[in-house]
Length: 53
Image (cartoon, rainbow, N blue to C red; front, top):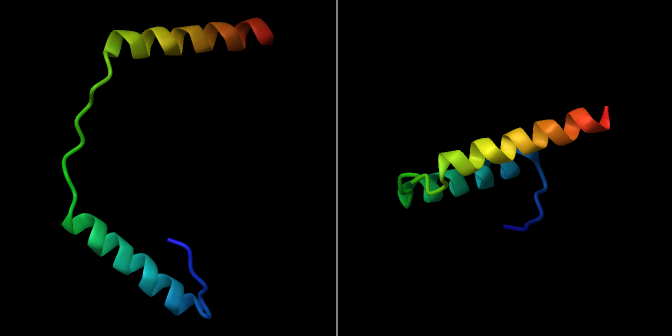
């Protein structure tokens, strides 16, 4: 959220309110990516970096 904060205390209060509200509606993270695709992407990234240097 955008806002104007006139003090650090106001900013901290806004952050704490956001975290509290977010945590009240939290849901567990579900990993949906195929691990083999992730490993392949990391491998390609390493190969690309190695070819640059």
